[in-house]
Length: 134
Length: 350
Image (tube, rainbow over all chains, first blue to last red; front, side, top):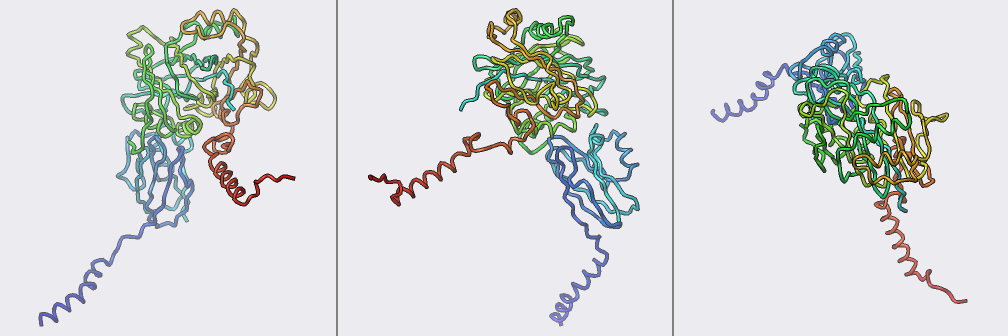
Protein backbone atom coordinates (compact mmCIF):
# COMPACT_ATOMS: atom_id res chain seq x y z
CA UNK A 1 0.00 0.00 0.00
CA UNK A 2 2.73 2.43 1.03
CA UNK A 3 4.66 1.50 -2.08
CA UNK A 4 1.60 2.15 -4.22
CA UNK A 5 1.12 5.55 -2.59
CA UNK A 6 4.81 6.35 -3.12
CA UNK A 7 4.55 5.55 -6.82
CA UNK A 8 1.39 7.60 -7.08
CA UNK A 9 3.09 10.56 -5.50
CA UNK A 10 6.09 10.23 -7.81
CA UNK A 11 3.83 10.07 -10.87
CA UNK A 12 1.70 12.93 -9.66
CA UNK A 13 4.61 15.24 -8.80
CA UNK A 14 5.23 16.51 -12.33
CA UNK A 15 1.52 17.25 -12.71
CA UNK A 16 1.45 19.15 -9.44
CA UNK A 17 4.56 21.17 -10.14
CA UNK A 18 3.46 21.64 -13.72
CA UNK A 19 0.21 23.10 -12.51
CA UNK A 20 2.07 25.54 -10.22
CA UNK A 21 4.11 26.71 -13.21
CA UNK A 22 1.10 27.24 -15.38
CA UNK A 23 1.88 30.98 -15.85
CA UNK A 24 5.63 31.21 -16.72
CA UNK A 25 7.27 34.58 -17.27
CA UNK A 26 7.58 35.54 -20.93
CA UNK A 27 10.79 34.28 -22.43
CA UNK A 28 13.16 37.19 -22.98
CA UNK A 29 15.13 37.60 -26.14
CA UNK A 30 18.75 38.48 -25.34
CA UNK A 31 20.42 41.21 -27.32
CA UNK A 32 24.11 42.09 -26.96
CA UNK A 33 24.96 45.78 -27.18
CA UNK A 34 28.54 46.98 -27.41
CA UNK A 35 29.56 50.54 -26.60
CA UNK A 36 32.76 51.71 -28.26
CA UNK A 37 33.98 55.25 -28.88
CA UNK A 38 30.76 56.57 -27.34
CA UNK A 39 28.55 54.79 -29.86
CA UNK A 40 25.98 52.00 -29.48
CA UNK A 41 26.52 48.99 -31.71
CA UNK A 42 24.11 48.05 -33.17
CA UNK A 43 22.68 51.52 -33.47
CA UNK A 44 19.24 50.49 -34.74
CA UNK A 45 16.87 47.78 -33.54
CA UNK A 46 13.51 46.32 -34.52
CA UNK A 47 11.25 44.50 -32.12
CA UNK A 48 7.68 43.34 -32.10
CA UNK A 49 5.36 45.07 -29.71
CA UNK A 50 4.84 42.86 -26.68
CA UNK A 51 8.36 41.40 -26.88
CA UNK A 52 10.49 41.21 -23.75
CA UNK A 53 14.15 41.87 -24.45
CA UNK A 54 17.11 41.43 -22.16
CA UNK A 55 19.86 43.83 -23.18
CA UNK A 56 23.40 42.85 -22.22
CA UNK A 57 25.45 46.02 -22.57
CA UNK A 58 29.23 45.99 -22.56
CA UNK A 59 31.05 49.30 -22.27
CA UNK A 60 34.42 49.01 -24.01
CA UNK A 61 35.30 52.67 -23.39
CA UNK A 62 37.45 54.02 -20.54
CA UNK A 63 34.61 56.39 -19.59
CA UNK A 64 31.18 55.73 -18.06
CA UNK A 65 28.02 55.60 -20.17
CA UNK A 66 24.26 55.15 -19.83
CA UNK A 67 21.67 53.07 -21.62
CA UNK A 68 18.34 54.89 -21.46
CA UNK A 69 15.49 53.33 -23.45
CA UNK A 70 12.35 55.33 -23.99
CA UNK A 71 10.47 57.85 -26.07
CA UNK A 72 11.50 61.41 -26.71
CA UNK A 73 9.95 62.54 -23.44
CA UNK A 74 12.11 60.07 -21.52
CA UNK A 75 15.22 61.23 -23.40
CA UNK A 76 14.42 64.90 -22.74
CA UNK A 77 13.86 64.22 -19.05
CA UNK A 78 17.21 62.48 -18.71
CA UNK A 79 19.02 65.12 -20.75
CA UNK A 80 17.96 67.70 -18.19
CA UNK A 81 18.19 65.39 -15.21
CA UNK A 82 20.83 65.08 -12.56
CA UNK A 83 20.54 61.47 -11.44
CA UNK A 84 24.07 60.18 -10.93
CA UNK A 85 23.24 56.59 -11.83
CA UNK A 86 20.51 54.28 -13.12
CA UNK A 87 19.55 50.66 -12.74
CA UNK A 88 16.26 50.32 -10.91
CA UNK A 89 13.96 51.16 -13.82
CA UNK A 90 13.61 48.68 -16.70
CA UNK A 91 15.44 49.94 -19.75
CA UNK A 92 17.60 52.36 -17.79
CA UNK A 93 21.06 51.40 -16.60
CA UNK A 94 24.44 53.01 -16.00
CA UNK A 95 27.46 51.13 -17.31
CA UNK A 96 30.88 51.92 -15.79
CA UNK A 97 33.99 52.09 -17.91
CA UNK A 98 34.91 48.59 -19.01
CA UNK A 99 31.86 47.10 -17.36
CA UNK A 100 28.89 45.01 -18.45
CA UNK A 101 25.33 45.54 -17.24
CA UNK A 102 21.93 44.12 -18.16
CA UNK A 103 18.45 45.54 -18.29
CA UNK A 104 15.21 43.88 -19.34
CA UNK A 105 12.42 45.73 -21.09
CA UNK A 106 9.01 44.70 -22.36
CA UNK A 107 7.84 46.73 -25.35
CA UNK A 108 4.25 47.84 -24.88
CA UNK A 109 4.44 51.12 -26.76
CA UNK A 110 3.06 51.78 -30.18
CA UNK A 111 5.64 54.39 -31.12
CA UNK A 112 9.28 53.99 -31.99
CA UNK A 113 11.74 54.53 -29.17
CA UNK A 114 15.27 55.79 -28.66
CA UNK A 115 18.26 54.48 -26.75
CA UNK A 116 20.44 57.32 -25.49
CA UNK A 117 23.24 58.23 -23.12
CA UNK A 118 22.72 61.47 -21.25
CA UNK A 119 25.99 61.99 -19.50
CA UNK A 120 27.20 65.52 -20.30
CA UNK A 121 27.38 66.05 -24.07
CA UNK A 122 27.14 62.34 -24.92
CA UNK A 123 23.71 62.60 -26.53
CA UNK A 124 24.67 65.62 -28.63
CA UNK A 125 27.85 63.82 -29.61
CA UNK A 126 25.64 61.18 -31.24
CA UNK A 127 25.37 58.51 -28.59
CA UNK A 128 21.90 57.27 -29.49
CA UNK A 129 20.20 54.40 -31.28
CA UNK A 130 16.81 53.96 -32.93
CA UNK A 131 14.32 51.29 -31.84
CA UNK A 132 11.57 50.50 -34.34
CA UNK A 133 8.49 48.66 -33.11
CA UNK A 134 6.49 46.53 -35.51
CA UNK B 1 68.19 52.38 -42.17
CA UNK B 2 68.06 54.90 -39.40
CA UNK B 3 65.73 57.73 -39.94
CA UNK B 4 67.20 61.15 -39.69
CA UNK B 5 65.66 62.86 -36.80
CA UNK B 6 63.78 65.97 -37.39
CA UNK B 7 62.75 68.82 -35.27
CA UNK B 8 59.28 68.34 -34.17
CA UNK B 9 56.50 70.66 -33.59
CA UNK B 10 54.48 69.73 -30.64
CA UNK B 11 51.09 70.89 -29.70
CA UNK B 12 50.32 70.43 -26.11
CA UNK B 13 46.87 71.95 -25.98
CA UNK B 14 45.49 68.52 -25.57
CA UNK B 15 42.47 67.92 -23.57
CA UNK B 16 41.25 70.49 -21.13
CA UNK B 17 39.20 68.73 -18.55
CA UNK B 18 38.03 69.57 -15.13
CA UNK B 19 39.03 67.62 -12.10
CA UNK B 20 35.87 68.34 -10.19
CA UNK B 21 35.21 67.61 -6.57
CA UNK B 22 31.55 66.90 -7.22
CA UNK B 23 29.26 65.89 -10.06
CA UNK B 24 29.50 67.88 -13.23
CA UNK B 25 26.08 68.74 -14.60
CA UNK B 26 26.95 70.53 -17.80
CA UNK B 27 29.49 69.98 -20.52
CA UNK B 28 31.47 67.42 -18.59
CA UNK B 29 34.86 67.85 -20.15
CA UNK B 30 35.36 71.59 -20.00
CA UNK B 31 33.33 73.01 -17.20
CA UNK B 32 34.48 73.64 -13.68
CA UNK B 33 32.00 73.48 -10.79
CA UNK B 34 31.86 77.22 -10.39
CA UNK B 35 32.81 78.50 -13.79
CA UNK B 36 34.29 77.60 -17.11
CA UNK B 37 37.71 77.09 -18.60
CA UNK B 38 38.12 78.16 -22.19
CA UNK B 39 41.19 77.31 -24.15
CA UNK B 40 42.08 80.48 -26.03
CA UNK B 41 45.17 79.87 -28.13
CA UNK B 42 48.16 77.58 -27.80
CA UNK B 43 51.75 78.33 -28.67
CA UNK B 44 54.39 75.66 -28.86
CA UNK B 45 57.96 75.24 -30.05
CA UNK B 46 59.58 71.95 -30.87
CA UNK B 47 63.16 71.76 -32.00
CA UNK B 48 65.52 68.92 -32.69
CA UNK B 49 69.27 68.90 -32.41
CA UNK B 50 72.02 66.57 -31.24
CA UNK B 51 69.63 63.64 -31.20
CA UNK B 52 67.11 65.16 -28.81
CA UNK B 53 63.77 66.87 -29.29
CA UNK B 54 62.92 69.82 -27.10
CA UNK B 55 59.33 70.97 -26.57
CA UNK B 56 58.53 74.27 -24.98
CA UNK B 57 54.83 74.73 -24.57
CA UNK B 58 52.40 77.09 -22.93
CA UNK B 59 48.66 77.59 -22.55
CA UNK B 60 46.58 80.64 -21.87
CA UNK B 61 43.31 80.16 -20.00
CA UNK B 62 40.48 82.50 -19.30
CA UNK B 63 39.23 81.22 -15.99
CA UNK B 64 39.58 78.37 -13.58
CA UNK B 65 36.44 78.16 -11.56
CA UNK B 66 36.76 76.51 -8.21
CA UNK B 67 38.20 73.15 -9.15
CA UNK B 68 41.37 71.74 -10.55
CA UNK B 69 41.75 71.20 -14.29
CA UNK B 70 44.39 69.82 -16.61
CA UNK B 71 45.23 68.42 -19.99
CA UNK B 72 46.37 65.18 -21.54
CA UNK B 73 48.96 65.42 -24.29
CA UNK B 74 50.18 62.61 -26.57
CA UNK B 75 53.97 62.31 -26.91
CA UNK B 76 55.95 60.53 -29.65
CA UNK B 77 58.33 58.95 -27.15
CA UNK B 78 59.41 58.79 -23.51
CA UNK B 79 60.78 62.12 -22.24
CA UNK B 80 64.02 62.11 -20.31
CA UNK B 81 63.22 65.32 -18.50
CA UNK B 82 60.34 67.74 -17.83
CA UNK B 83 61.36 71.17 -16.54
CA UNK B 84 60.06 74.63 -16.16
CA UNK B 85 60.99 76.55 -19.28
CA UNK B 86 62.01 80.13 -19.61
CA UNK B 87 59.25 82.66 -20.18
CA UNK B 88 61.03 84.39 -23.00
CA UNK B 89 61.27 81.68 -25.69
CA UNK B 90 57.67 81.48 -26.87
CA UNK B 91 57.15 85.19 -26.61
CA UNK B 92 60.29 85.79 -28.69
CA UNK B 93 59.06 83.42 -31.39
CA UNK B 94 55.69 85.13 -31.58
CA UNK B 95 57.43 88.47 -31.84
CA UNK B 96 59.57 87.06 -34.67
CA UNK B 97 56.49 86.38 -36.80
CA UNK B 98 54.21 89.13 -35.48
CA UNK B 99 56.47 92.01 -34.46
CA UNK B 100 53.60 94.30 -33.57
CA UNK B 101 51.92 91.86 -31.24
CA UNK B 102 53.12 90.99 -27.82
CA UNK B 103 51.48 87.65 -27.41
CA UNK B 104 50.98 86.46 -23.92
CA UNK B 105 51.92 82.86 -24.02
CA UNK B 106 50.14 81.04 -21.31
CA UNK B 107 50.80 77.65 -20.12
CA UNK B 108 48.63 75.20 -19.12
CA UNK B 109 50.65 73.97 -17.14
CA UNK B 110 47.54 68.45 -16.62
CA UNK B 111 36.43 51.13 -11.96
CA UNK B 112 37.25 49.34 -14.25
CA UNK B 113 38.73 45.95 -14.07
CA UNK B 114 41.16 46.79 -16.85
CA UNK B 115 44.74 47.79 -16.30
CA UNK B 116 45.58 51.44 -15.85
CA UNK B 117 48.49 53.13 -17.58
CA UNK B 118 52.02 52.79 -16.27
CA UNK B 119 53.41 55.90 -14.65
CA UNK B 120 56.87 56.64 -16.05
CA UNK B 121 57.58 60.02 -14.53
CA UNK B 122 56.00 62.39 -12.02
CA UNK B 123 57.12 65.93 -11.40
CA UNK B 124 55.91 69.39 -10.47
CA UNK B 125 56.51 72.55 -12.43
CA UNK B 126 55.27 75.54 -10.48
CA UNK B 127 51.50 75.01 -10.05
CA UNK B 128 51.43 72.08 -12.48
CA UNK B 129 51.44 68.40 -11.54
CA UNK B 130 52.91 66.51 -14.48
CA UNK B 131 52.68 62.75 -15.03
CA UNK B 132 54.12 60.89 -18.00
CA UNK B 133 52.15 57.72 -18.76
CA UNK B 134 52.66 54.68 -20.90
CA UNK B 135 49.67 52.78 -22.19
CA UNK B 136 47.04 52.44 -24.87
CA UNK B 137 44.13 54.79 -25.26
CA UNK B 138 41.93 52.80 -22.88
CA UNK B 139 44.63 52.49 -20.22
CA UNK B 140 45.42 56.20 -20.29
CA UNK B 141 41.71 56.96 -20.23
CA UNK B 142 41.29 54.76 -17.17
CA UNK B 143 44.18 56.45 -15.41
CA UNK B 144 42.70 59.83 -16.19
CA UNK B 145 39.28 58.74 -14.91
CA UNK B 146 40.72 57.37 -11.68
CA UNK B 147 42.68 60.56 -11.17
CA UNK B 148 39.72 62.84 -11.43
CA UNK B 149 39.74 63.88 -15.08
CA UNK B 150 36.26 64.29 -16.61
CA UNK B 151 36.84 62.99 -20.11
CA UNK B 152 34.47 64.18 -22.88
CA UNK B 153 32.61 61.72 -25.12
CA UNK B 154 35.13 61.94 -27.96
CA UNK B 155 38.03 61.04 -25.63
CA UNK B 156 37.92 57.24 -26.20
CA UNK B 157 38.23 57.62 -29.96
CA UNK B 158 40.90 60.34 -29.79
CA UNK B 159 42.97 58.53 -27.17
CA UNK B 160 42.84 55.37 -29.31
CA UNK B 161 43.83 57.44 -32.36
CA UNK B 162 47.04 58.41 -30.58
CA UNK B 163 47.54 55.26 -28.54
CA UNK B 164 47.72 53.20 -31.72
CA UNK B 165 50.78 55.22 -32.77
CA UNK B 166 52.53 56.02 -29.53
CA UNK B 167 51.85 54.69 -26.01
CA UNK B 168 53.27 57.78 -24.31
CA UNK B 169 51.08 60.54 -22.88
CA UNK B 170 51.70 63.47 -20.57
CA UNK B 171 48.98 64.41 -18.09
CA UNK B 172 49.20 67.95 -16.77
CA UNK B 173 47.05 69.06 -13.87
CA UNK B 174 46.78 72.65 -12.80
CA UNK B 175 46.51 73.10 -9.07
CA UNK B 176 44.61 76.31 -8.38
CA UNK B 177 45.54 76.37 -4.70
CA UNK B 178 49.25 76.30 -5.55
CA UNK B 179 48.65 78.86 -8.28
CA UNK B 180 47.13 81.20 -5.72
CA UNK B 181 50.06 80.61 -3.39
CA UNK B 182 52.35 81.65 -6.22
CA UNK B 183 50.17 84.64 -7.12
CA UNK B 184 49.33 83.23 -10.52
CA UNK B 185 46.07 84.51 -12.00
CA UNK B 186 43.91 84.39 -15.07
CA UNK B 187 46.03 84.99 -18.16
CA UNK B 188 49.27 83.88 -16.53
CA UNK B 189 50.98 80.80 -17.84
CA UNK B 190 53.57 78.26 -16.83
CA UNK B 191 56.03 77.26 -19.58
CA UNK B 192 57.11 73.62 -19.61
CA UNK B 193 60.15 72.19 -21.38
CA UNK B 194 59.87 68.52 -22.33
CA UNK B 195 63.04 66.78 -23.54
CA UNK B 196 62.28 63.73 -25.69
CA UNK B 197 64.76 61.41 -27.42
CA UNK B 198 62.91 59.99 -30.44
CA UNK B 199 63.38 58.80 -34.01
CA UNK B 200 59.77 59.25 -35.10
CA UNK B 201 58.66 62.78 -34.45
CA UNK B 202 55.24 64.07 -35.30
CA UNK B 203 53.12 66.95 -34.17
CA UNK B 204 49.77 66.14 -32.55
CA UNK B 205 47.10 68.49 -33.86
CA UNK B 206 43.89 66.48 -33.56
CA UNK B 207 44.22 66.53 -29.80
CA UNK B 208 43.46 70.25 -29.95
CA UNK B 209 39.89 69.44 -31.00
CA UNK B 210 39.24 67.12 -28.09
CA UNK B 211 36.15 68.05 -26.14
CA UNK B 212 35.14 70.81 -28.49
CA UNK B 213 31.93 71.22 -30.45
CA UNK B 214 32.31 70.33 -34.11
CA UNK B 215 31.95 73.92 -35.28
CA UNK B 216 34.09 75.43 -32.56
CA UNK B 217 37.22 77.02 -34.05
CA UNK B 218 40.60 75.74 -32.91
CA UNK B 219 43.37 78.32 -32.94
CA UNK B 220 47.03 77.51 -32.45
CA UNK B 221 50.49 78.77 -33.36
CA UNK B 222 52.98 76.07 -34.21
CA UNK B 223 56.71 76.72 -34.53
CA UNK B 224 59.35 74.28 -35.71
CA UNK B 225 63.10 74.54 -35.74
CA UNK B 226 64.81 71.87 -37.80
CA UNK B 227 68.29 71.25 -39.13
CA UNK B 228 67.02 71.53 -42.70
CA UNK B 229 63.88 72.71 -44.46
CA UNK B 230 61.31 69.97 -43.76
CA UNK B 231 58.70 68.40 -45.99
CA UNK B 232 55.32 68.46 -44.28
CA UNK B 233 52.19 66.37 -44.44
CA UNK B 234 49.50 67.61 -44.74
CA UNK B 235 50.89 70.49 -46.72
CA UNK B 236 49.81 73.77 -45.25
CA UNK B 237 48.58 76.63 -47.34
CA UNK B 238 48.61 74.96 -50.75
CA UNK B 239 45.65 73.97 -52.94
CA UNK B 240 44.26 70.70 -51.67
CA UNK B 241 45.98 71.16 -48.34
CA UNK B 242 44.32 70.73 -45.00
CA UNK B 243 41.84 73.51 -44.44
CA UNK B 244 42.56 75.96 -41.70
CA UNK B 245 46.28 75.29 -41.67
CA UNK B 246 48.53 77.95 -43.18
CA UNK B 247 52.28 78.12 -43.47
CA UNK B 248 52.89 81.71 -42.48
CA UNK B 249 56.68 81.68 -42.46
CA UNK B 250 59.29 79.24 -43.74
CA UNK B 251 62.87 80.53 -43.71
CA UNK B 252 66.32 80.12 -42.21
CA UNK B 253 66.22 81.03 -38.54
CA UNK B 254 68.06 84.33 -38.09
CA UNK B 255 71.17 84.50 -35.93
CA UNK B 256 69.58 87.12 -33.70
CA UNK B 257 66.53 84.95 -33.15
CA UNK B 258 68.67 81.95 -32.24
CA UNK B 259 70.84 84.08 -29.99
CA UNK B 260 67.78 85.40 -28.19
CA UNK B 261 66.31 81.94 -27.78
CA UNK B 262 69.63 80.53 -26.52
CA UNK B 263 69.72 83.20 -23.84
CA UNK B 264 66.51 81.93 -22.26
CA UNK B 265 66.42 79.50 -19.39
CA UNK B 266 67.36 75.95 -20.41
CA UNK B 267 67.90 76.81 -24.09
CA UNK B 268 71.68 76.50 -24.32
CA UNK B 269 71.33 73.31 -26.37
CA UNK B 270 70.04 75.33 -29.36
CA UNK B 271 72.64 75.72 -32.14
CA UNK B 272 73.92 79.19 -32.89
CA UNK B 273 73.08 78.87 -36.57
CA UNK B 274 71.90 76.52 -39.31
CA UNK B 275 68.30 76.01 -38.20
CA UNK B 276 65.19 76.34 -40.36
CA UNK B 277 62.15 78.08 -38.89
CA UNK B 278 58.55 77.24 -39.81
CA UNK B 279 55.55 79.05 -38.42
CA UNK B 280 52.21 77.36 -39.00
CA UNK B 281 48.92 78.86 -37.96
CA UNK B 282 45.96 76.64 -37.17
CA UNK B 283 42.51 78.19 -37.50
CA UNK B 284 39.92 75.52 -38.25
CA UNK B 285 36.64 74.07 -36.93
CA UNK B 286 37.28 71.28 -34.47
CA UNK B 287 35.25 68.86 -36.56
CA UNK B 288 37.71 69.24 -39.44
CA UNK B 289 40.87 68.80 -37.38
CA UNK B 290 41.24 65.04 -37.70
CA UNK B 291 44.92 64.84 -38.56
CA UNK B 292 48.36 65.60 -37.17
CA UNK B 293 51.49 67.08 -38.76
CA UNK B 294 54.34 64.91 -40.00
CA UNK B 295 57.77 66.31 -40.87
CA UNK B 296 60.69 64.89 -42.81
CA UNK B 297 64.05 66.56 -43.51
CA UNK B 298 65.73 63.63 -45.24
CA UNK B 299 64.23 64.34 -48.64
CA UNK B 300 61.56 61.67 -48.30
CA UNK B 301 57.83 62.13 -48.06
CA UNK B 302 56.55 62.40 -44.51
CA UNK B 303 54.75 59.39 -43.12
CA UNK B 304 51.00 59.12 -43.69
CA UNK B 305 50.74 57.38 -40.34
CA UNK B 306 52.69 60.07 -38.54
CA UNK B 307 50.32 62.62 -40.07
CA UNK B 308 47.36 60.65 -38.76
CA UNK B 309 46.08 60.14 -42.31
CA UNK B 310 46.54 56.38 -42.20
CA UNK B 311 46.11 53.85 -39.44
CA UNK B 312 49.30 52.15 -38.22
CA UNK B 313 48.09 48.61 -38.96
CA UNK B 314 47.66 49.34 -42.66
CA UNK B 315 51.24 50.45 -43.02
CA UNK B 316 53.20 47.80 -41.19
CA UNK B 317 55.42 45.98 -43.64
CA UNK B 318 58.32 43.62 -43.40
CA UNK B 319 60.72 46.43 -44.13
CA UNK B 320 59.23 48.75 -41.54
CA UNK B 321 58.83 46.32 -38.69
CA UNK B 322 61.76 44.07 -37.76
CA UNK B 323 59.36 41.93 -35.80
CA UNK B 324 57.91 40.76 -39.10
CA UNK B 325 61.27 39.75 -40.56
CA UNK B 326 61.54 36.37 -38.85
CA UNK B 327 59.14 34.42 -41.10
CA UNK B 328 61.10 35.49 -44.16
CA UNK B 329 64.42 34.71 -42.51
CA UNK B 330 63.12 31.29 -41.53
CA UNK B 331 61.86 30.69 -45.04
CA UNK B 332 65.20 31.73 -46.45
CA UNK B 333 67.04 29.39 -44.09
CA UNK B 334 64.76 26.52 -45.01
CA UNK B 335 65.11 27.25 -48.69
CA UNK B 336 68.89 27.37 -48.32
CA UNK B 337 68.85 24.10 -46.50
CA UNK B 338 66.69 22.41 -49.13
CA UNK B 339 68.73 23.75 -51.98
CA UNK B 340 71.97 22.69 -50.28
CA UNK B 341 70.64 19.23 -49.66
CA UNK B 342 69.66 18.79 -53.28
CA UNK B 343 73.02 20.02 -54.49
CA UNK B 344 71.52 22.84 -56.50
CA UNK B 345 73.76 25.35 -54.76
CA UNK B 346 76.96 23.54 -55.67
CA UNK B 347 79.16 25.49 -58.00
CA UNK B 348 79.87 23.94 -61.29
CA UNK B 349 83.18 24.07 -63.01
CA UNK B 350 82.96 24.42 -66.72
